[in-house]
Every structure is written in structure tokens, then in C-alpha cells.
Length: 293
Image 1 (cartoon, rainbow, N blue to C red):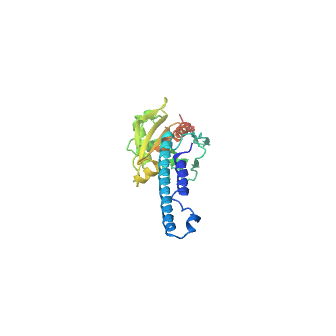
Image 2: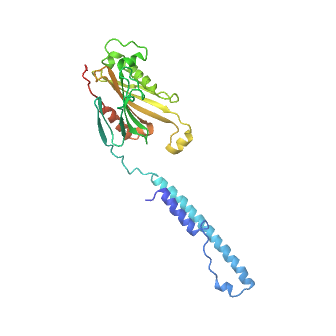
Image 3: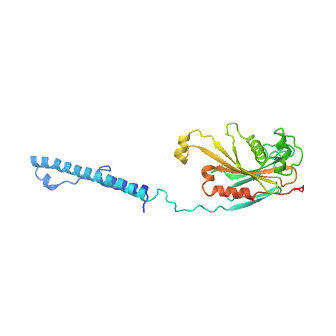
């Protein structure tokens, strides 16, 4: 069955070739009129032309009525975009490192920071790219995966908290939602001032039974200069980004390692990309560096 666009194109072609909307047809001479150049002939020829125009107008109206009926009937009988295709299954590639391992979609680029200037300082956790040591993603969809590494005591000192006592688990450091807020604020410091602040979903905060893992979700509104253009192109007037996060203290060397995986909501909620990013975060493993764990 043809979709409404195909139907419309077919009828438009029909109108163009058979009605007054298209190029005028070639008029052949009528011998019976031309054999006698009398007043009768001069009167009959215009009347035939008028009759022909009348028929063209009549046919044009009929075709336009048929076009409207066909489009309405086709539109109500089936959607303009039939849901006949199923999303492609996402394939993954493993990333194995001395500090961590992770799986990311096969189509993602992947960059492991190795240059000394790109890596965060061992004492401050700061570098040219903040605390980021690994980045992957799909720039076409603005989907990004990032792994950060920094000392636990630096996280607390930046917030004016004296790092004392047991810092080996998130539950001993503090209330899980409060620790997640600290991690979020640290990440927000590296962003431009024009970017809206990400909001922590407190209901998403959870810790593992041993207190070594902390997971949470954030959501952030993206500034849009022309919402009317966004509505025309994507069907939404606002953009939001959802970020999944998992922090780990499993290295046993006094450092926190965090993986962040984010996408725009229009992609995150399409039934494929969000689930793929969840798998990325779930696959994140930190390698013990010989300390207590």
C-alpha cells in the first residue's frame, strides 16, 4: 500500500499531465471548420474552445477531489511512518586497562589518556582535562562515556571537609546521597558557566553491600537558542541530558574512580541507546592496585 506522500505524488503527476495545471495540450485543427471561412465557422470555433476549457475545469475539480479523498483515506488507514523495522542490536568492544576495564559500543571512539600532561596529578587529581583518564562516545548523537580518577581526600578537602577516619567505603565517608552530590559538584566545576547545573536524582542513589560501589543518575537541561527550530527538527522544544554514574573505591590505593555515561533524552529513551549505556556502566570494573580493598 502506498503511503500518503507516494499517493500525493502520483496524483500530482496525474493532474499535471491531464489538467489545466500542466503544459497545454496540442490542439489539432478541425477540417470541417476550416473548409468554409464563413461567419458560422468563426462562431463555432470559439464555442468548441469554451467547451474544451469547461471540460478541463471539470476534470481538474474531479482530480483534486480524488486526491484529497485518497490522501485522507491513506492517512487514516496507516501511519505515515510504519513501524516495520526493529532497532539494530548494539555490539560492544572491551577496553582493558591497568586501572580498569569496560565495554563500550563498537561504534564509539575511545581515547585513553597516556600523555603526562593529560593525566590528572596523583596528589591533586587535577590535569588539563580535569580528572578524566578515558573518554569514549558517539559525537553524532552527543553520547559520551568518561572515566575519572582522583584521591578521595581531595574530594573532601575541596568541600572544606577534613578527611579523617575510614575512607575505604562510601558508607563510612558519609550519607550516600551526600557523597553523590560531592562527586556531581566536582564534575560540574569543569563545565562552562553557561551550562545548566545537573540535578541529582536522589531516588537513584544506591550502594553495594560492601559499600565499595556508589551508583546514581543525574538530569540536566541543555540551553537551546531557537526552540522553534528544535521543535521543527526533532519534535521537542526542550533538550535534557541523562547521565548514569558508578563510583568505585575498589582500587585500594586511596583513589576514587567514576564512570559517567550520558546521552540526550531523545536518544536515551529510544529503547536502545539508554540500555546500551546501562550496560557500559554495569561493565565498569576497577583493578585493585595492591592496597586493601
